[in-house]
Image (tube, rainbow, N blue to C red):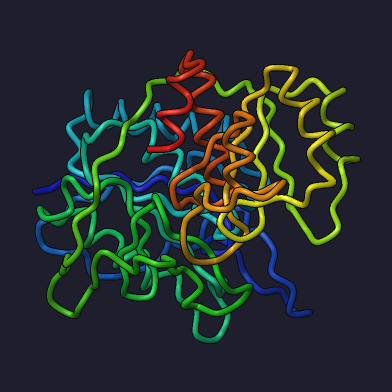
Length: 322
């Protein structure tokens, strides 16, 4: 038998719709009471590790999950782990775990877009799909994955793309790495290896700002007077900023604060291409770090992980740009 640990954290998958149509948390998680047939070779253990709407989840909660997973595999002989999670920040928890947990076992996150008693609720189906993926031998070495709507997505690139659609999770540019059929889990993409970091704390303050047409240096000037440890800039196109931002940006750089650049575009990667004032080539020369194909919320977590792992200078540059 394969021992699978299910860690429940709250979210829509554990909520219900009240008489007025509002979705609210349950005192008890309804998914733990649901009756369904497990795969024949699975022994399931469930724990409510916390019960929070996903906007309430913090990096401290993510660290708690990391530590529980490591104990489950190293001390309790679990084959795989399933985490049920609210969808708003699910991709961030998945990315955090993918960057901090070594390749110990299959780790699968899932959630729901419709609560337990709504018409067409997707929670129980996604939960069973996640258990199937976590107990699949082929899931080893795939990193942390997100399973919803019959698809398997890499935590590294998956993102929520729709506010209400059950097919909300998509992987821009690359697509899913696998599919779940009635009878098996099928993988058809292989992930590039990436570095992981060991951390014991998550103390850094790292805001995200988004570039826009006509943006000036005011925001950067304000940030230069704040007690921050890093900054993520969601830049235009392949990684460009309006020239009016540069004076304030330099003030942040002068504080020796690492600044990561991503693109606000849905597809593609940020890279230094344009050499005009404010262009990516200019920003790279100023010392900004270009992240490779991840979005701003994930770049923030990656910088947070790097700082809490004790990285500095070129170590951070290489870790972020990988």
